[in-house]
Image (cartoon, rainbow, N blue to C red; front, side, top):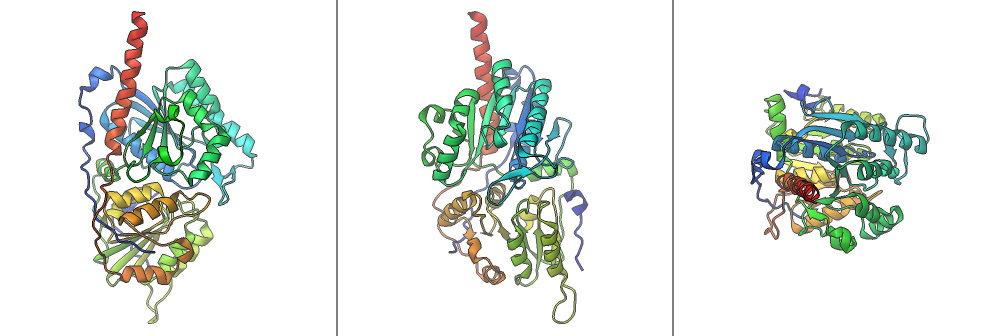
Length: 446
């Protein structure tokens, strides 16, 4: 029998060693060194776009940025354009709203198709593109922030970027993960899709949500010097801000568990996380430890059911297992992660940032297809001593059980990871708006 946890109604809808890192203090309302009214005569209208074809990471990153921009006071209205609807009802405010696009699906080999509709790829991309363009024409944003793909999924942003550049004064910003993929793959795909030309023509800034000390994207991907001049490393995004937002919205964040310790398994959206979740369910948890698996809303129902059956499987004495629970979706997983003593996770950007932000002992089992991004990130952080790593080809319940039994050891910290991205982003928007304001003054004088 699974044990219900208090307050979850509000939450639904090669080894290295972990090294503690200093936790930056998030003070969102103190980002500005100048008075806001001197820079912003009116509140800005901001649109954030993510294509969301595999997992929840792109949208969750944009939601965190939207939260920061609202708290900073620079934005009046924020529209989040997303390819998935999960999280809309839980992450909202009087200033934030959503446009959910018909969903796309990216298979494990990287091919795209409509997730729900009986439509060709060409038809659904045309539909999504027209919806975005209509929203832009009516909303007329001051700032447009695009997540990770310069031209959008299957170039669906091309008409929008052309419209914004020709017909509006909207400033366009491209936000990139710390690591995109293997450098050779990125060089080929960016050349094939003419992404550098898109940055050259349409984007005013490019933000890298990472730390140059950890991974120098400009150098690794050999971006052209003329577009590299638009790039800014923001630092990683400190995920502790999510709890501040949740406390503001729901007031209560205390969680109580039937055991003293908590082991948490996170697999992102869950589309390809079944093997890790199943291995966790079959592993031997430490004594007096309660386990929680968050399968994610995109995990196939048959796989989720298999994991659920392991949780309900009677022990040798016939008693129903009571130290493991399966949750399909948790709106704010950082509330659980903050309490966790052990974290087993895939290596997506947000999950990794959460582990670093809360300084958790973690074993990361990275995705290795269709992109090498998670593998590269995890190998780097493992080498620096921040996380433990298990290659997915070595994944088993025994391997996880062995990790649970290991004593935590501390290695000398060789680098301090920059987690100040949420402080830097409002500053970068301040810069771009000041330039826009100064340019307008120059035009008036001439």
